[in-house]
Image 1 (cartoon, helix red, strand yellow):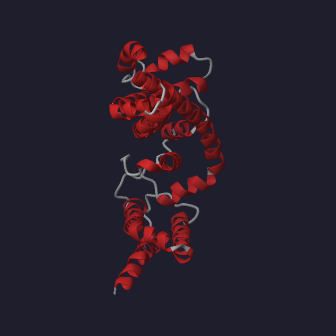
Image 2 (tube, one colour; image 1 turned 60 degrees about the vertical axis):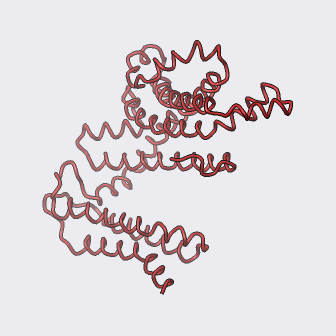
Image 3 (spheres, rainbow, N blue to C red; image 1 turned 135 degrees about the vertical axis):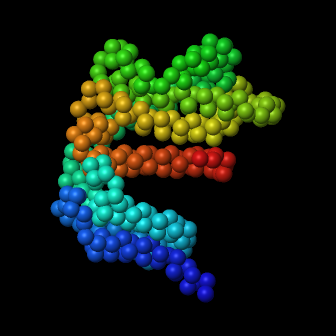
Length: 317
């Protein structure tokens, strides 16, 4: 009985996907919506369900356990697509201009893939350079504030004053100070990452128990050893929380940063298509940006789990 229930739960996403496909094929489209060139939604669902079934068949017991746990989410995902499809292209309940059909959105991802890829490379160039600079500066500033009384005396007030200012508020200044739009945009992203990383890193160091340093000193550790082998590892959970927060803030800043005269970029693409009232392209750009953000955050989680395997479960996100 238990095995039959598990099999049923594992096949629920397939049943949900089948229902979505049947509604797509059997319910006629509204005349208010522009027809898409192909049944992109059906193709998308077929590809996802095929991958799901292949992983289910060849995956290990642990993989099947993960699929069993997430089966309810996958089932709901296909029904969200179904409801959105019904409210847009089938019955035109939502405003047609602002809510295009899923077929048109997926069609843009395919037909405009080359240009979206070019914009993505431009975005990654700005995002990665600014993010790395912000993380490095934030960690160094946070460590200096946490361990140096003199540095904390002079710099902590500056962090408290300048840090809370939104990075986009610096746009008039960075356009004058920096020689190019790319450098200015990278600086704004670095600023968005720097502040939360600095604050959380210094806060993590401040919350380290003095007994850790006392034990290290008793065992003969010097100041440098205590900083790099005791203090920084103990503060790493806070560092990663600051990096996660800064990463999310950087993607928010990215859209505005790419408005500074850029000719490419996902944020620029979204704003450009919005002005052109091409909302299918806007949603396609948002999908690409969300996927990039998902990949970056997932990589950070993997890096965190690898570096802090000895503190598994401490960091909550």
